[in-house]
Amino acid sequence: MRWDKFGQLKPHGPQEWYRSRSAQFASICPFSPHARDEDAIAAERFPVVRHVDHRVGRFEAAWVGHAEQEGFRAEGSSGGLVSWVAVELLARGLVDGVAHVGAADPAREGRHFAYRISRSLAEVRQNAKSRYYPIELSGVLDTIREQPGRYAVIGVPCFIKAVHLARAADPVLAERIVFTLGLYCGHMKSAAMIDSFALQMGVEPPAVEAVDFRLKNPDRPANWYRTQLRLAGGGAAEQDWWHLVEGDWGSGFFQNSACNFCDDVVAETADISFGDAWVEPYSSDGRGTNVVVVRSQELRAMVEEGIAEQRLTLREVDAEFVVETQAAGFRQRREGLAYRLARRRGGLMPRKRVAPAASDLPLRRRAIYTMRAAISAFSHRAFRFANLVHVPRLYFSAGRQLLKLYQALTYSRGRLGALFDRLEKGRGQGA
Image (cartoon, one colour):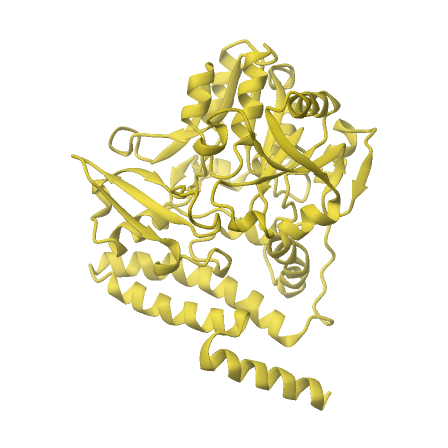
């Protein structure tokens, strides 16, 4: 995997590799129309479960809450439960290592984050928090093949799916990867987002030594993201996301194009998966709160034991609650995906669990989905051009205007938003 010109990781190989078809590759790529889908993988892995929901998938139980045990909640982006489960697996001797994303040295490794294998409780806790950055699995899977042991892998939905497809094709991985921990996902960003954040904070990108995308503050709502850039030689720069061009996550700046064709929000193939509880009163609680879906009976028992011992504070919820906490993601991955599939022209046609459909979608919703795709395509190209000509303000100025238009269309903000509301109302009355 190598960086492309837009800050995305792409496969690299000889020209013959690009020209040749490979049945094995088609069966293990998570976006291949020839690979098993999430329903098939989950049905095989979790044949008997208490609940089945067409959005959340197959699961044993779901909860909302946080880790009560000292430190986990404060150290994590949300409620600390991802690290708590990973540490518990190590402490109980159920795994010998946890494969997850940790900080990298950009000067030495050419990237800010990469997969690591943590083999101690301290290493797991050190690598907590969210990483909105391109990552690839090949290196850590090679390590698992080379070093015997039992492993847990933490990743976003498409990565967990890819792990299971790889396990089906590789007996060594099937034997050694014994748990998968999923992270709810809106979409992946390119490496350019860190560079853009830096420039908007008055920092040259090469000076950025480390990044905390979600600096935690218990006195502020959890959804008020603030990024901190730690600089080489000391010092730091910070800024709230809403002051940054890309600060509205759903607008799609720097989104990976593959994310337009994903229909898994909650990592349906993982043994257990975690997200932020983006509903009140939890979204206003700056200490952070998780919503958790567990599919493995073994992990359900482990979580219930943590609750009984008061190391976890969790309230059981149903599928509707889980969906409500990720409402925007489900609209984008189900309704929006159906629209994108209906509009797709040419190229490889993804095979998804969502049927193409556009005719029943209101005009404004169609405009929102179209604009997200346009913003994504614009941001990659415009940011690269602005940097090539050494005039980054070209990108920032155009990006802010696009963001203003997007927010007027989506949230009815400002005079332009009021105009969209009147047009929509008039169109409805005319119909």
